[in-house]
Picture 1 (cartoon, protein in one colour):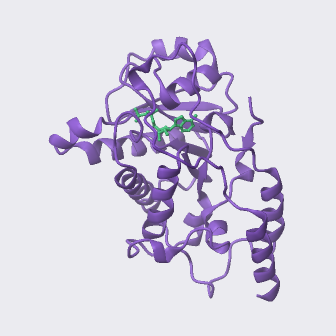
Picture 2 (cartoon, rainbow, N blue to C red):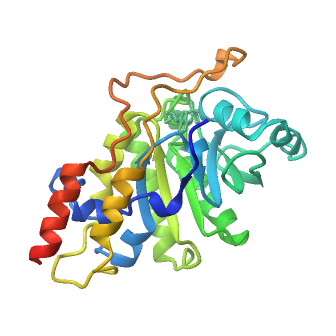
Length: 284
Ligand code: ADP
């Protein structure tokens, strides 16, 4: 298994803007005002969520909470059988909600099991947005109630449950931003959107500037002197990309990952960008 990746190595949204890794011009008009504190709490990565050494990861579970394919299967395999045993005691979970367990053999302390909606059937009833939003809100609430400082979301419902990546990312971002605006996330230090496929990362990169717009250069940066060093460290430490959705020979194909992704490179920052950021910091 790949080395665990600590939260401190995940680039913040503030850093991604600084590196011009996310271009605000690509997105729609901002729906909210820029907030540097919020941008320092957000990360977006393309990574196997089971490698994150973090307070909590959010699993895209099903109503039984007893495992399946996709990210659910990967999490159960990495956590070991004790996770299944604890899940058995939970009596399932309703769609649009979530329940929390220990992380067992995972580097993450806790797993929050969220049951996202199946897109087409819930859309017919006009419930898809509120159910998906409910997953994100309940997961954030569980993290706060349990005193957890960091949470990484998988892209709930965007696999076999068929939720389009763009729409799903907007629901996720809007729900997290609203939670922040309500002052409920003060104890949370990092909220990570952990994508596995390029299509999901693309959706976040497109929509992040709408919900978490960049703070203008004129405003003071939160960490003015540390950034270039942090970036250099980060670029050397980032792990190798997952080459494919983890599979297990015994995995049932009822929740098999649909993927049309052609590019699974885990690229958050590269060395050229680091040089540019350093040059920009020096000339600022
Ligand atoms: P759902 O049934 O909710 O759609 P899936 O597990 O099929 O759940 O997919 C949810 C998301 O999890 C998809 O975006 C998929 O690409 C992603 N995913 C699959 N494996 C992993 C993994 N190891 N780490 C992070 N995300 C993953």
